[in-house]
Amino acid sequence: MHKTIGQINERIREGSARVVTAEEMPGIVAELGEEGALKEVDVVTTGTFGAMCSSGAFLNFGHAEPPIRMERIWLNNVEAYGGLAAVDTFIGATQQSDTLQAEYGGAHVIEDLVAGKSVELRASSRGTDCYPRRTITTDLLLENLNQAIMCNPRNAYQRYNAATNTTDRVLHTYMGALLPGSGNVTFSGAGLLNPISNDPKLRLIGSGVPIFLCGAPGMVIGEGTQHSPAGGFGTLMVTGDMKQMSQEYLRAATMTGYGVTLYVGLGIPLPVLDLDVVRATAVRDEDITVDILDYGVPSRSRPTVRKATYAELRSGSVEINGEEVRTSSLSSFRRARKVAGELKTWVEQGKMQLALPTRPIDPARQARPMHQTAKGPRVLDIMDRGVITIGETEEIRTAAKKLLKGETNHLPVVNEEGVLVGIVTTFDVSKAVANPGKAHLVKDIMKTKVVTAAPDESVDIAIQKLEQNNISALPVVDTENHVIALLTAMNLGKLLGGRWLK
Amino acid sequence: MKLLVTFSRGKGRKPIIAQVVRDTGVLINVERANIDSSEGEALIDVPDDQCQLVRDSMSGLGARVRILEHGVIYNESECVDCGACISVCPREVFSFDKEWKLRFEDEKCILCGKCIDACPHRALTLPL
Image (tube, rainbow over all chains, first blue to last red; front, top):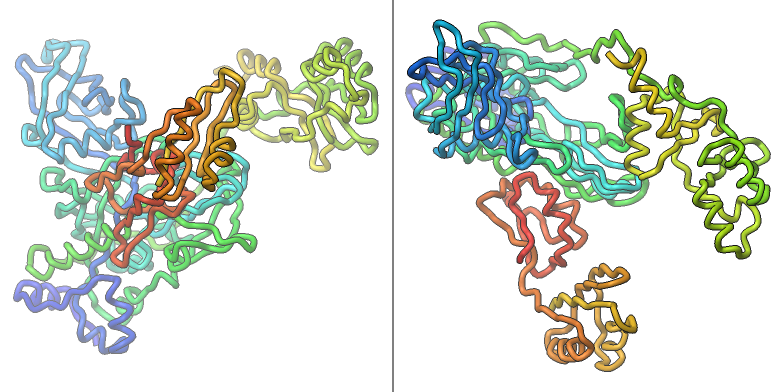
């Protein structure tokens, strides 16, 4: 048996369509069987509500008198794109205020407009014969705009990897606050309610398909940027009319230490055409697995600490290395349910009919990392290979002489095998000399917790280590922890000239 | 009952909390403390019926004592029930109810402030 989209829309128009949410579907399939569920259910509604940074809106202001060709544009001191000719702009959710920085951004401008608040437009121009005006400042309400069209390049991620932090300091990331020593796990996503997770082969979701976007009827434009469904990370580009949106489903937010983002509520109604749709929409939180990544590693490829399903993540804690670690969601399951529930009412009341894609989305795509033609500077490009080390059993006097002779402030300390065991600085040696006590040997005064760099590491990472630890040098070590060089704040001067400065 | 005790450490560096424990015999639970060379602030928990005794004793030693009736201030209208606060809280003040609505147990809060930074929606603030 199968149903056509026409039959389903007919039932929606008659008000007799059976609509359920994706959360209800697994139970229905378990009770009625796949055939029974296909006969019973016409539409499954999905929903998600979470931080979707890649969001924004096209706004049209109409012409001023005398007219202006706006080149630089600010809304409540948040810069908006000025390359769209005269009276259009695109306000991006993550753009931050020139004055309030991370506490106010493009997302807040969008929320304020939707909430009916007035927003100050400020723009400047060079002035042309046809557009003589050079500056304009005016207060605008959403209703004053000709168009306010939300257009989000990358929304509705199919799933999102969870995060933890194995370092010994708190990290502030787009995955929220990550406590040291794997002190917590954060995750995001609606799991069994997520649109693409209910249609992973993208048979039903594609260009032209009607959706719920922040409380307004909207549409899928096509695949989202970074769309990578081959690995389970499909995304969608979506649009909707901001004038019909509600604050209930659209919220600006600030991730401390990271920046501004927009919480977006998005749902897609899926027509139950055949058994494949029944099977796909019967997906449970237990069936969707993500990696818990270590955000302590500042790299594109972060190591996986373990895998976990949405059911485990939502249970409140997961086990990592034998310890119960508490989990926090960054997206709201309650609001995701509300999106799916509201969408269900829309379809039941005939407010939204369904459509099949006018252009399909590739379900097998894999996003590639950036093609980089020029590698940024690495530690080995600027490090000082003439590093002077000292043995741990040598006398402090010897350390003082070496510091003087080597004209350096840092002496990495090595054991008999040449392996790094500590570091002494001019400060440590001066202190030992000024307060003579029991300490005679280098190992008595050295610091044993040494922050190091690897030769092939990016200089940006090394700079971050210097800043975070408030230190001015890093011993550079090989894989066996042998000291091969020293990177000091002074070496960073090499970056300010020559081939790295373009 | 939770008390916020602030004291200056200028003269003599008196061990105020230890002194009060000895004088009153009340077992004080120090929830958090931030003490440096010049001043200190401690959040302590004492049994309700002995609160006045501890307050008087502390004040007698020159400390300022304030009863903390509230934990962090929770603004429900800003909250979207994401739960970002849940795992950063050391006292399990936040949890979800059966409907995935955020549950907030004021009386457990020790005002450490960790949740305030963790909340993406600025729904949590410190009481003045």
